[in-house]
View 1: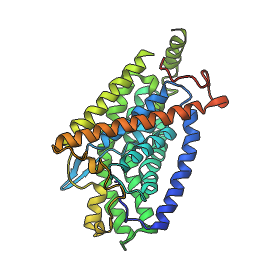
View 2 (view 1 turned 180 degrees about the vertical axis):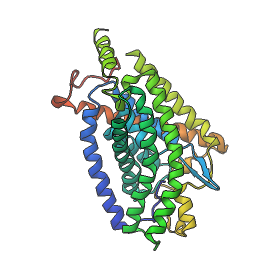
View 3 (view 1 turned 90 degrees about the vertical axis):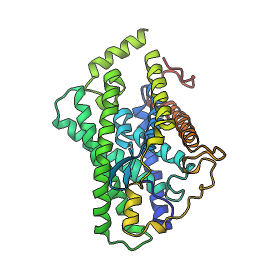
View 4 (view 1 turned 30 degrees about the horizontal axis):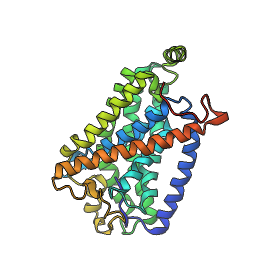
Length: 230
Length: 113
């Protein structure tokens, strides 16, 4: 979904840049709390690197169309929503040098692919956990659902920005329908990959899955205690 | 803590494998946004990135002729750069936790335990 230069006009690109900068500012403060446990800091770097890698793996979704993981929900569930926003923002920053996503479109891309995915996804994730049974395994279906919703959410964020500053005159409803339609399909891929990775990490290190905190509190405290005494 | 270090190493190796090798099997079709832009007729409004001349533009390392090697190398470089930038950022953020956070080794090296 990397927006190239030229799709969005200058003023709205700048506005999206301001929104993205503000979101990153808030995320830096929030991430500080999420990274309270020091072993999570290098892990967050790994999550960003992993998202970069998986974003290269375009999968086919329909005739002549592909999609790839956006990773906002994956990062949010593993290391926390604010740290997740920062992870994807770092990925998008590095991708600029690969000419993937335009330089002036960086704010647009951060707003859609980092902020919208991680925050909308985190909201859906938390809501799902309210309904699901209170056990660590519930994190997997909650992450699946959140990832599924996060991709059309990013598509809608783009559509909204396009409505404000798109450089071509495309009817809003037409664009929204087309964007959401294809991105629901990509969302299924996003959901499968997210659930797979979250369940893998949950299987080996449930204490490192941010979204499972509280659900594995007892086990985590025991692990921390042994780490301190070791 | 060696278990965390093991997870870090394993995860990084997996990321390098995905970006360096598996990526050559990725679909080359236009992505969702590109496809919509083609169908709705605004793909032509896209302009070249200011970094279109970067030595790793379009996930190909300049000067490496073999397409697969070039693409794989670009992926490896991207993973390492993202890990370095992300890791550094989060260590700085985490150190900033200061008095409000659980600062237990102020200014110390980020040694995994």
